[in-house]
Length: 185
Image: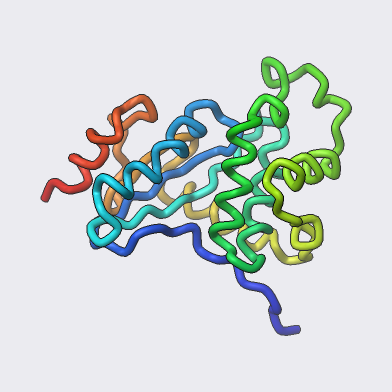
């Protein structure tokens, strides 16, 4: 059977320096890093850097898998990467509504995956329930997971420049510092 869907790559910019950012959508440090990516692209220049967003699902964030699948489902829709970015921004803006208290308790214990999908749709304005149900969408989820593991990445946020993990980079670093590192030769 022929594949009828395509996940839009989560890539912005078209410059020669490659900045890969591995994020878990509900991790507070990943949310902080995600919030800096547009500024980074503005400061460094779309023609000088390429930002590649990689999703790093983590099991201690209990709905991580559902939310990652929602983001990738959105990437299969019209305006794919923009829709995926809207979903990520909605989750980031309402992070606590998608997380468990201390990773194990709170009101989300009673939430179902369908509840999470509906919340994301409400906050993002992106209708993704149908795309979420694409039977082989897990192929895209697995690609993100495998790619991270092949690069020795297990936590978020993790940053790579031109294929090399930057262990000393942090979500707390100023955007200007990120830009400076990316533009060094």
